Image (cartoon, rainbow over all chains, first blue to last red; front, side, top):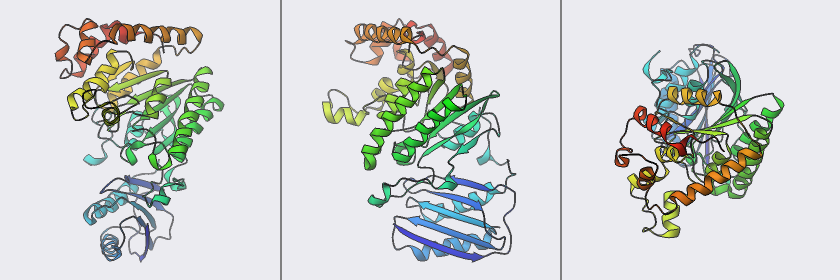
Length: 105
Length: 307
């Protein structure tokens, strides 16, 4: 198991009021992303646990691209990876941000 | 709302939906609250030893909500994570839910099965979990709680999950739902391809699939593959009294003995259907849910009151 953590400074806080959201599933070629609104609004952390070793540079690029493109301020994003491709990861991260933007229960 | 987030129960395929989606759309809108949610990160203590990825909820979602305003407990297995298999944490969450139902004055517990059985990587803990769940389930039933199982996911309901489903007060199944203990590959491996050809998908569905399970009285209601249909079927089952006493068990034992006597010699499920008095048994597999329900409700074996 390889664990990676990326800290980013962000400009835009995540929208909505939900405290957390969960997308995806840990299955072959898939991943789950747990999104929690627990950080200061100008920070975003992405923590990854993956069994596919040696892809740190690609994770760094995908996470960097995500933080640049989506309002992810204040979010702690935790990933359990089942060997997903970078495009799947990008979609799941975007989906997580979209889901937490919904109104609180 | 955009398409991926649609929550209309009539439009959500049970088979395609995730366990969370099934729970949220099955219960009254906005009523579901989870116990030991993913943010608590109660994950398997065993998978790491094998360098396998874990899931934050260990593939089991438990919580409470309302179903047509009645407060109920609900558990759902995520069939895509390790085939919905039972491990230590996965099983303990269901055991705990069933025990908690006794103390919380809950009358109904729903279990949304989607499982291949016990997780091989934590087999001892998983087998123990199956036993603990069956005990907790029967204790809940003995106290008057109804435990209804819903089966229609991609992993079906196999192994220990099949045993637990047999302990439930009632089962709802869809065509895609398969209920059995040994799966097709297991039977073929142990008994040979002449006994059961696991690659013959029509045979697998005809034998273990929801339609046969409904016709021979394993399942008590048949649902179309939508959350709305599962909800309607569950609500209809809950209208009936949930008996669990010596008379019920003796009636069930008698029913199973008679069923074995009547159909034990049949070589194929279609022969059973013919013996049940269904005119065109060959039409059953392709039949639309509505027509099938009408036939199933007429067949005596399917409409017993034992269990």
